Image 1 (cartoon, rainbow over the protein chains, first blue to last red):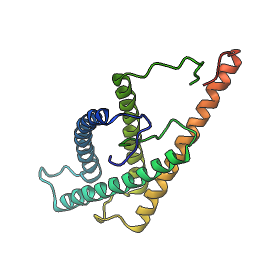
Image 2 (tube, one colour):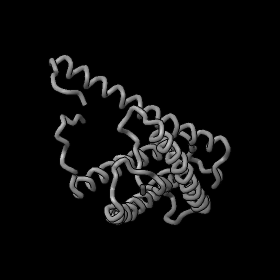
Image 3 (cartoon, helix red, strand yellow):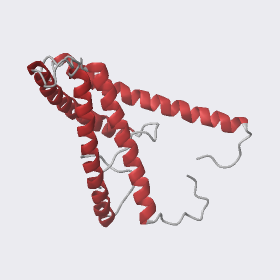
Image 4 (cartoon, rainbow over the protein chains, first blue to last red):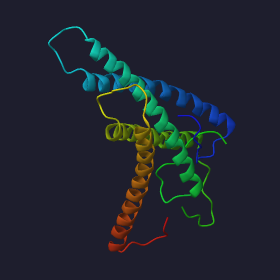
Length: 103
Length: 96
């Protein structure tokens, strides 16, 4: 998740250290994203076990599922960042929804 | 947080990193939940096509907006609940 801003004021060197934390986390999140996606598309598309091999219908479904999910994620990510930004600037009521990044 | 004229010592790097990491954890979790919920609510599972159509896109946008609203409202409700509890216990001290 790029482009979010921090409430905690870290110095540049602290920022760099935090960057490596962020990167490790991003790798982990990516792997979880992948696992999640496999499960979702399997659950939604594969319901017929009369054959061992994937049918064309199932393959197409999985392919569309992946595309759609990635596009959905991208869109949600954009909206999320916008809302997050707006909330931080508005100085809203909550400790919920603050963000990260450089200053 | 109130400063009674002494001033707190600066948080250490470890403390700052831990706080920032915890915040990141919370935001990531929030985003993952939002993704799961909005996908379930807005995207039909027959996957007729690979692209998002207009209806789905609009649904997703509104979903994010409402999710944030709910987040704020729950946060406010919980804060007022916990304040009410503190008041009932005859709470003293300086408020945060």
